[in-house]
Image (cartoon, rainbow, N blue to C red; front, side, top):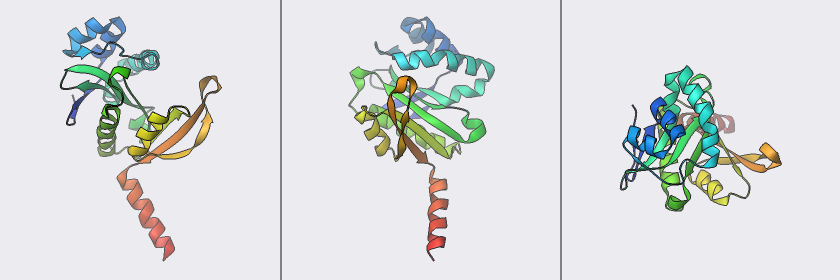
Length: 186
């Protein structure tokens, strides 16, 4: 199990037994994982994503590595999640999803966890990571920019909501793109 660690956080792969326990309830997840669970976790959006994650992981256990639980070390508590959605193992591209419960928001945990996850994705040879966030969600846009994402446009999302689209490229891709631009300029 590939656990990622930052100064304040652990990012734990969301293995099959944890997913199944989450669907039963916080007490079961705490019992199975050994971590306390923040009251507000999982949020509504992530909870609706869980059946897809469960089926995906049941079909192929390698997919466990693409979603990590964010654990606050000082409290030994699950406070959020971060994931690479899509089929990164096939396309070398992913869509970043992340979230931290409201009680822990505004303390830099989402940025810290997502940065560690992006660094790991880079080491896994993921070339491009996309993200989208609602236009009204300025905090999320700020986090994405801090992480090195570039806004690529806007589009409609489910229910007609407008979203901002962002993209992040691995250091290898950026190096080759910059080198090609330098060669063109000569």
